[in-house]
Every structure is written in C-alpha cells, then in structure tokens.
Length: 101
Image (cartoon, rainbow, N blue to C red; front, side, top):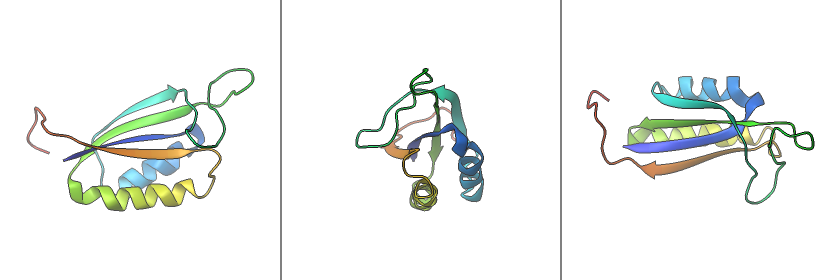
C-alpha cells in the first residue's frame, strides 16, 4: 500500500477531484488552505498581501497498482499551468487499522 500526498493550487480543486474519481481513489484527507513555495520555481502561495493565493493538500492511501496511473494524470494536469504548481509525493504505508481497504 502507498500513501500519496498531493499539494496543489486551490484553483485546481475540481480537476484534482476529477482525477481522484477517474482513478477510483475514494479514501483521502483534504486540507483546504495550506501555504507553501515550490523547491525549484513557481509562485509562492502564502495567502498574504504580496502572495495572496493558497494551496490545498490531499493525503490518499491506495493499492500500489493505482499509484502510477494517478501520478500520470496529475502530471498531465500540472502541465496545464506549471507556474501554479501541483506536486505529488509517494510514501510506503506499512500498516492500517481497517483491513477492508
């Protein structure tokens, strides 16, 4: 099982939800307002006067086989507005309390 953390510009909300739906990713945790700045380029999203935009974030857990198609679709979405930012990070998830996954 894998955990995928997705950080994205808030304006991408509907598109990210559509990608999750397309890839049959049901279980996730969503944070509406997170602040950040990309490690390479792109605009900061601080919710401030100088940088008023914000990001959102999702943490989703899934079977290993779902990760690659999800990352592919998220990358395609990111390419539509690269300066706004969308990143996904994958971790191993070793245990969970509910085995009905």
